[in-house]
Image (cartoon, rainbow, N blue to C red; front, side, top):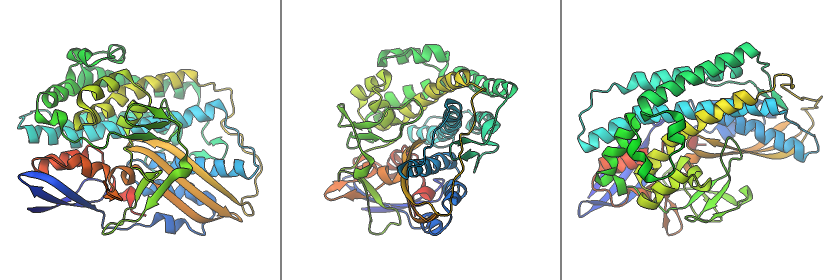
Length: 431
């Protein structure tokens, strides 16, 4: 039996074709049918235009594209012999704003996408109004980000060699206040325990103390068939050297070094999105991958019991909210306002040529920008996004990550939940 389903609310839409045998998904096909072509739009533009155009790739992770773009430019300039040095202050400000974007994305995904779908699938009747909870965190954390970035979405405050903002002590205090507001919400509503207590959890047994919305979801899923649903290839990879994450690949528990030069895009039939492989193998990217590569004790404990199931994947993402909030407090405390915001030197942007690569950890996983510039103009621009890693149809005889995870689901609704556990972004993927 075949079932075709249109999936919306993923920054665009996708089409899923399911094959069922004996009441279970035995195969699936993912199609992204709309084409945006940002890579083509960038061709022959002055290379600095990428700082304005690439954030328009996505309305959710636009800041991640901005940081990846400036990293590609600065890497290329360094390769061309231009010495680009970031002050600690500039680097920390970039880290703070990127972290804020991940937090607001994780929270909105949890409350607006995952929690209602889990309740529906498990037949849980809930009186909770999730929209105000998501809105409060997203609004508050975005105000903290905007102190430095000026606006969100589509901020353009980064420049070669640093940032254009020069925050005052009062503005740092404002940012700290906003972060503290979000922490109070996370403690009272999401976790049901203090942030410090939660971050001391190191094993599965610790989660018995967890309350709030996250504890409720974990209890509901761990006592249901969803605890072991959605398992993929159990291979993970992280490229972004940023925030508090480590780079590497894990198959499944042995972490090894990686090199972006082995990343390869592959055209797919019936889809405008290309697949991505590393040394011709497929890997999952995202919060679960980051937890596994960083050897986070709580994520490792969950993985030992449930492997790369939908439960582990969802929990890993919300676990990052706590980690990133603590990280943001450290970043604000470490900012030295006496340092320069930008170390920009005089640069002839019209005649320079370079090849550069920028890598960052976006909310959904590793994001890679590659820029080839000749005489100040972009000759080739490549954007490799997390959804391409997680949502391909496969490579060779091997199923794609999400497809492998959906095989064995007993209904299209269960398969859709597995699909959404990767936080799909159609808009990012079709270039």
